[in-house]
Image 1 (cartoon, rainbow, N blue to C red):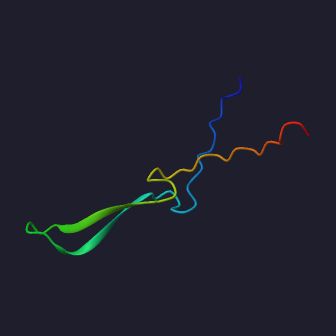
Image 2: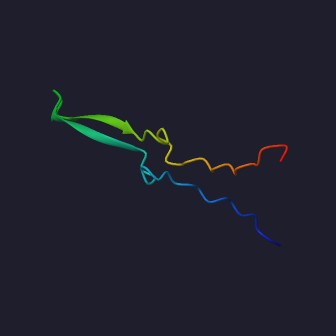
Length: 62
């Protein structure tokens, strides 16, 4: 019996699957922790994957 196959996940080409990174702002806060912010990939909005492209369809009537 054939096993169902799952479609391959399309990894975002802009971030290579690492959609969120932490960037240090320099310096430390009063408790000694590094000050950081989260930066998300603008292309995939932090998901790490891209949707599959839709096939082009011919215009109707031709």
